[in-house]
Length: 168
Image (cartoon, rainbow, N blue to C red):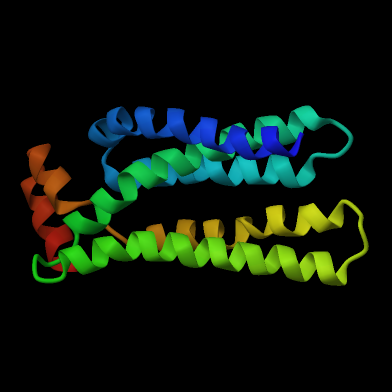
């Protein structure tokens, strides 16, 4: 069961990453990330709320994975298109660094929960539910960003591209 729970996230990531290229080109970087982030948040909420049915956990994992895969495919593009060329590589590389930091936080959170909370459903609900915190912060942060100037220029929206470039 635990192998299925873990692998279903990866299965969702696979399909999210494939679908991301089409969404990314059609709707732009920012709105695509927001859309995939909504999938992640919904999937995380379904997992957290799962009770006596394993199907909710499985479904939530696939939905969240779909969001993670889409965001993982689009976020480095969005970040690199919004950075000055001199620091573009370093900033885009931070995407991987933050993934590693997130995994480290998750491991320590799981360890802390396992050491301090009796073996109940709270041992997995707390770490799963905690995913909503950085996801929610990311959603809030995206409201303060503009669309990628490069994507706007590609769509012949030159005035908006210039405004986005000036904002960034």
